Image (cartoon, rainbow, N blue to C red; front, side, top):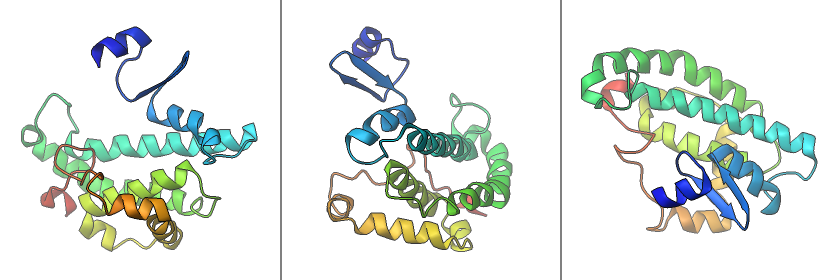
Length: 180
């Protein structure tokens, strides 16, 4: 992996290599693949709006991560637990409603790679913050979540062993004390 990263001049995975094109960063990879896979509009202005939404999702995911690592990635959760408790409380009370409220108004857009990303965000939040999410009511996001879950190819994948379950090593981690 390190050799491939050095060869292609990328900082870290994920990255995509297609012939002479190298694309790194999840949001940019999705921006690149979206039109090719029928998951983004062909018109540039519409694609850029979609990319903007994906970048906002990326911003939100940083905040998700910071609930369990608010001080430094190099420290274990247990070494920053007090700060995590404070950060998670603010995240549950302020940041989840702010971001999901914004995405709620965009969850009715045509199906795209952003739909898939929002599905994963909702799945992850339900895993990491089940109590907090139970109190939330975002009808459009719930409908989008169900629509994605029921898509033929995705439904079989979601039920397969290929899907990696959420765990304590991923972005979305369930620490009961952080869920209030």
